[in-house]
Image (cartoon, rainbow, N blue to C red; front, side, top):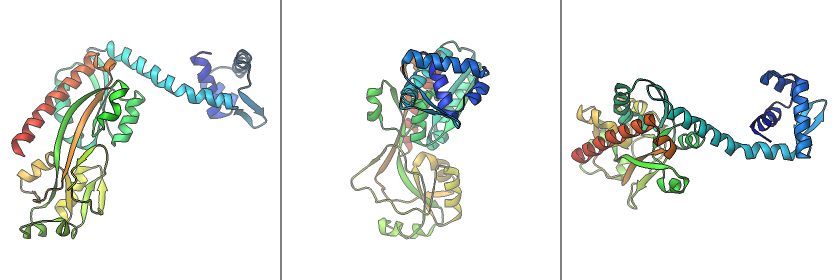
Amino acid sequence: MDISDIELIRAIVRSGSLSEVSRQMNQSQPTLSRKLQRLEDTLNTQLFHRSARGLAPTEIASFIVSEAEPLDRQLRAIERHVELATQLEAGSVRLGVGPIIEQILVPDALTRFVQTTGNIQVSVITEDDITLLRMFEASELDVVIGPFDVEEWNNKGVVTKRMVGDEIIAVARYDHPVFQYDVVDAEILERYPWAVPTTQGHIQRRQDAVEPFEPKVTADNYDLLRRITIRMDTICAGPRAIFRGDLEGKILREIKVDLGLYWESTLFVRPVSLATPLVKHLVTLCEDVALSLRAETARTN
């Protein structure tokens, strides 16, 4: 059995029709029928139940398809490595990022990448941490940066690099009524509606952290949360770096309360990908930008 045999079995399982598979593969139906019969003879087993309604997989066919998924991922990883290894002045890099990283690290890193490479295309996918890791594991992304749990991936042969982290703060519009209080505690915070990012990934929480309130609005889009916070008596929470421009411009104002939460992000890349020029260059630029951001955070916090 080879890859083409597995592809044939998978195609028949999906469509249930040899004529449909014939159309998809651009091969004659008799040719595929003979190939399927030879495969069943070689394996000494029946792969499909034949009926007037089409072909239904046996347990053996279903087993082959399910066990082939890791092989598919491995083949994609091999093909992607070869592709990256031969790309110098042309090609593409696929970067997956969380919504916070998209705003505070990616713009500078990509600007430097574009300025220092040739005819390279960069695809940036912004998703939640679970989706990013699924795509990374399936070799659909070369590099991912997000609030990932590093310990969970230590034994998977993945290179991890710390990016940026920041204290999570609460903010409100500059003339919000919450600022009339000299001391703001959980009881006062609970009086106002909250607009907060969707909870995801690895967030450090102290034992004395403020218990989360039932939010009125949750979203991955910080620009949307920012607009809502500016227009209404809502309170928003997130890493300080997200709000830095609005805080300096006195559009938003930090509420002096310690939430006891800390957000951090990590870059994941496979060793074989990191060995290729383009990916290594992108990772190095991300590390440089992250180092600058960490220094800025330490200086301003």
